[in-house]
Image (cartoon, rainbow, N blue to C red; front, side, top):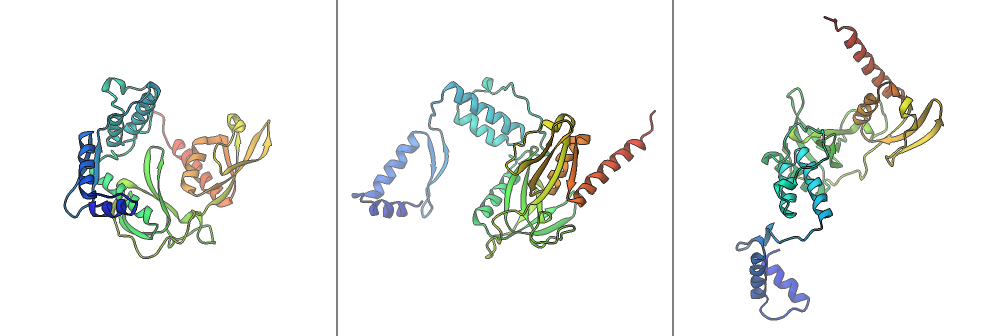
Length: 291
């Protein structure tokens, strides 16, 4: 907020006297306490960094160190450094007994990626349609007009998850539908267009109702996801679960990692996709010659 705006705001709240000088003295005191505050003529005050000491218990310090450790291993090294600085955590205290295995494809603290994330956060606040230019895995550049969007961290990789209203649906007729939900890796986003005048049409991502069964060691599975519900429980054989999923791709990946312990029942086309993937995997193993 600019000094002039602060003067007006404080005046409206009953503060009297020379408010301009009071504000200047207050900012000076804050700077002496360790707050780095940027100011310039006709520009608002901006907090750059706070060096104000924070008193923490040992448990709070350990919790911050663990959070920083996880962020660093997920590629957010700059954000992890901020937590270390806030908690005054020394290097010798940064080691953690908890080991993670994310191996993100990029360092999300790199300047251009950090800038991309900030731009996306701004677009998401505005809740208006916007365009991104994206490079596919094959190297092709395509523009995408996006509606409702959000940032998601999945398996250690940061994505922009978005509803693409004009996207083609191959299996679902009603629009919008879950096939129109796309994920874009943050490091492959080349440019971000400005917010349009069109507000988001949708407030929720469309979902797909899926029924699947779990066998073997997974037959004792207890749903932890709010959108999952057990509808049939054959204790000696399997459990049957109904779920509402907004990402067909991520659901397929989860079912494939369960291997022979999972089977999709409905919809048929999704079950066929998983079956074809497993058959291709078997064919690949069958084509391998033992040396």
